[in-house]
Length: 251
Length: 302
Image (cartoon, rainbow over all chains, first blue to last red; front, side, top):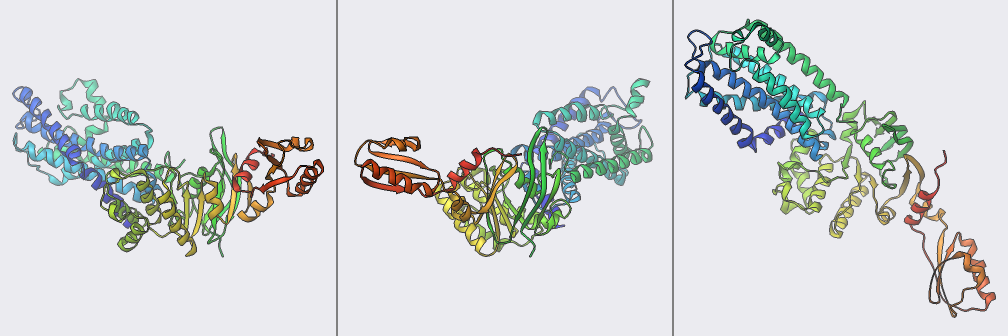
């Protein structure tokens, strides 16, 4: 247990020591999106009856920031350790695959929630969006950050160079999160793209998270929760398996 | 008693390169053991396999009887490795680095031992300095301290003195020797053969993934009979019969190759017969470097 706690502490300290870049910068980015999109679209679009576009946008932006930062945390920590070589400090001690996985995962979730909370608090100056079903919002936040934390660990282990990691982020994580319904409801899409959205796992995370705020969603939140929880379980098992086998870590 | 390190039938391949082709090696507890070989001989591969940073294709490695793959927890608790490359985490100070490393080994309260390590490695006044701000030699000392936070019984040093100043080398060796005298097993790889000769009781030489020599330092030195004879004569002329052995002449001083001590008598006889007088004469002591070069130049027989 001490091994896990120490690695977790080290991972938390790592991003906290540079929180200007790891927490404040993403909060600012999300606010810029909010500022621009809500100014341009707020009078033209009403996605759910009685919910302003600005209010609709806030949970999506919060979740998108959480997901992207959860991914960034584990993936950048691992690739930095690999490139600088100090990954040996965690490979030499008797840490199990579960401890290794758990520490990187929890740190990713904490980073995701720190950024998410920051975005949510500052966004309250634009529109008040208290979550109606806070438990649902927390559950989707947890599983969403967990999924992206896992993906970050996998990408960090797989990538050998920073640009491979950037490719993973720019060609997979960013498009999937932008096309998941952060800025729109998928009911506003043409039928083909609406169907395609159902194959995007990010859609269920955002839609379910938004349900936690408004009690309204594109698909039933129970279905989203099952999909998100099952994806998290599957990815966790895969990630622990990779670490246990020493994939790309122990040649 | 279980040996400190036990390696059986160890093979490791990287693509088309056979890095280790069948290593059998036992290192007893308390030994100061040297692992020598040119670059690419497989020394670091062997150490990385011991440390669990690589997985073997064939064979077993045991540390104090614990298999490094199946019983990795007990094996890694017994092993401290000082890596060859200088690596560090730029986010932390020296003390934070050592406290975190202790935690990975399950040690919560390790301040006392960490202070001892800092003191023995001359790092006390750098304890609260960020790793980034340290010189290369200082970072190397921190790596040594990191390898020792959990007081491992077996300590592996992979070229610990590469690019390190004289002062640190002395500090480091004094510390390592005191650990060895307390019963810790030390395994050392080095390019400085005089270090191996001075400290190691036993030596293995690796070449192309195989052990080509394994013996006590003493018998390795004794078995190596090749010497150099430096002789100064009262004339510049060297007797013709000695020309084939000549390596170098500086004025009246000639350096002769002596394949074995048995040939010494014959050389002296030839000089006497020629009528020349010997003004000075010295015989080189064998050193590990000669042995190393001669073994490395032999063909490995398949």
